[in-house]
Image (cartoon, rainbow, N blue to C red; front, side, top):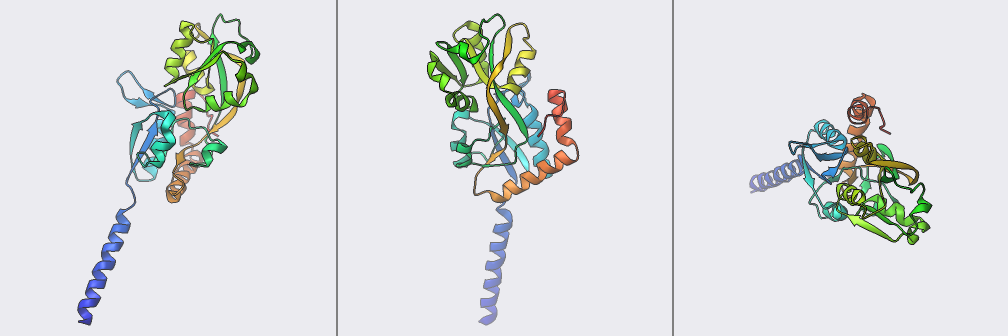
Length: 252
């Protein structure tokens, strides 16, 4: 009887260990806005490409995990993450104090500014010139937070919110807004292809940092990712990815 009891205990212990070993996810689902060049977007063949895409693929490989990219409604990103529909938010995700309350971040890997873009022949030179004007930006982005922090925004005619920056640029070109606010990295990448149509003003809405967002309870995942990112920076891999997309190493 004792032998049978011992055998049953051994089987139960083995099962628990097997379940425990298999509980770690082998695939990372990364949530992103797939209209956010050059961080993550669709190329002419509808493939997902971009700086953050390359960074995520390399990090996942070092973590010995498969990776799946899932386009999401960026304005509902925290709900997608904490609802466990994605495992990470990696797409030019700005670190803010408010977001830190809901999300665990990696260390910052890039700096960015919130810049003002106007059409090339616009008379607007500064933020003060936007009083009584319509300003566009992406809904759910840090651009909205940056604009709302400044008292002058209360004097804008309106702040129009868009699903993505492409739509914001279209309305700016059509004259439905007089300026748009967005990440400098994205703005300069987009404008480089349309140099005669738009310009970036010197005035801006502040500097910020990008990080990868994860669930607070996924502490092991945060540790694994940070180790991979640190290794990529140390061996020059992240610098090469940066040079591919920006022509320089701008990784923090």
